[in-house]
Image 1 (cartoon, rainbow, N blue to C red):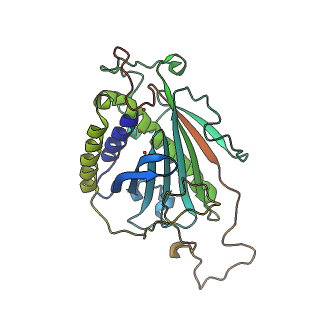
Image 2: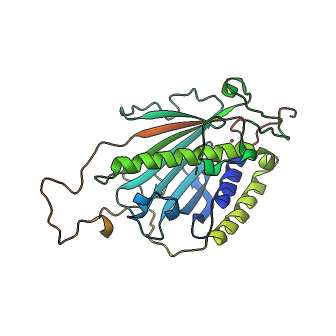
Image 3: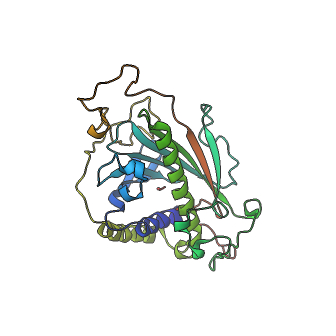
Amino acid sequence: YRIGQLYMISKHSHEQSERGEGVEVVQNEPYEDPEHGSGQFTEKRIYLNNKLPSWARAVVPKIFYVTEKAWNYYPYTITGNCSFLPKFSIHIETKYEDNKGSNDNIFGGEPRDEETEVCFVDIVYDEIPERHYKESEDLRYFKSKKTNRGLLKEGWIDTQDPIMCSYKLVTVKFEVWGLQTRVEQFVHKVIRDVLLLGHRQAFAWVDEWIDMTMEEVREYERTTQEATNLKIGSFPPAISISETPLPSSTRSGPNSAPSTPLSTEAPEFLSVPKERPRKKSAPETLTLPDPAEVKETFHCPGDPSPRPPLPSADSPVLQ
């Protein structure tokens, strides 16, 4: 799945991109971390203005993107997103294990607040948005020719062998009064839909990547990313990026992982007009408790080793 993950992300990004919309790869290079060892660092710009609901498009510029930075130390990855919006952040930790989602302490067993929600995601029988449905990717009817895995029937999680699970710890924060709950719930839903679709595709495309070496999938990744960048076009950057350690009080990746500091000043479109009197009884901002952290588990028919073995011989926004 280490190879399948890279293949799926590149192909999925290319399919979901079009002129002015999609995923532009800014940086993709090896990265060495003192704690996690050798890995891969990627930086992407995700243009999604037309994918936002009408209430969100009303308050963002015409060309809007979020910056995604990811550190892949498979089987552990860290992903962070930020945009020009103040006090808005997404942080995702991922771990892969050979089980059915039974490890409740995979992220260290540290105490969580009462808003934490554990969401089990079944890549076969959970519904995906209708616009993304393809019969060729319906895992109820898909059977791999090279691995002989599938068809996946009801109860497949209890009977499939080998099997692996992708654990996601997702934290979304949007601390803007009046919009916090609505935006955070919307972002959690979008992330869940994207990860569900990507993991379905990773298995549906298994015959395309199962025989690849790491060198071959890196070359596929490079050529596909170049084609995707040309497909969506290029735009001038809307925010400046500098490499600064995350504050110690912030949930983050390793200290060596760079991050994008956000301005604490609200953008003009969220500011109260100067000519409009402010009501003392209606504060402009309100500090609320930390938002929900959602641990999503994705059951994938395979194991997380770099080269899942064939049964007859001898695991999609995700990095």
